[in-house]
Image (cartoon, rainbow, N blue to C red; front, side):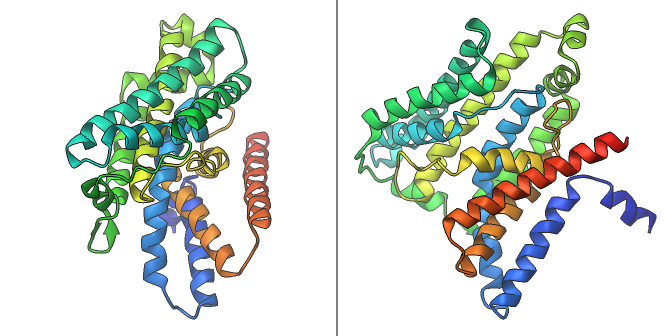
Length: 315
């Protein structure tokens, strides 16, 4: 019993429990049909949320007001850049991935410069930059019909014993992110800044350098995500990253990361991603409209934030 209580006390476990409940509800509705396929599909789609969710997690952990709202536009532009550079050639896959990474890093660095140089609040700065990036993407990628190289498209859809290879890579990436957060100077600096920025500065932490790196990291992960999405869905699109505006924040909050900063939870990102993907799958199975799906997702986020706030008050 003690072990169970200890496990339940960990905030990330509830996102996995929620994912399990949703999965059970879906297979009960379908009479057990397609249960394994649902898990495979959930893993395939959840990994994209995990990638951008981890970037968003580091940004939010910096403290109140820090958030990256440029991710959807960033993902769309990077998908176009990757496909255009690859040009359908297997020999250009590595170059296209580097180009997508550079595109994302440029967006992330620009976000920080808007925040630091012009003293614009992060939520306004990243939202403003998203409109600029979206305009560039429309001019650059609108009507782009280039397909991904066959080897790249095949790679993003490979399964090992029924488990998508991207999901395996996503688990490894999340593990490394957890090590970076808890064991490396960078991660501890992010946590310290989120807890008290002035105290972190007085302690000798290079606050602005860490913030710059964090926004650039979030942009870089958005760029890589755009390239992988283009490979998975067999092509780039201006709208390919639209759903990650809400979901990238949702997986962070539902996964147990504090919106007040200074407290992050990497395992919860995976649990929350699976929960959201399975929830959308279940709602689609029930025939629920897109508007209702968005409403329910928003209500879930509000509920989690309210619950977290209530626990903080009780303490």
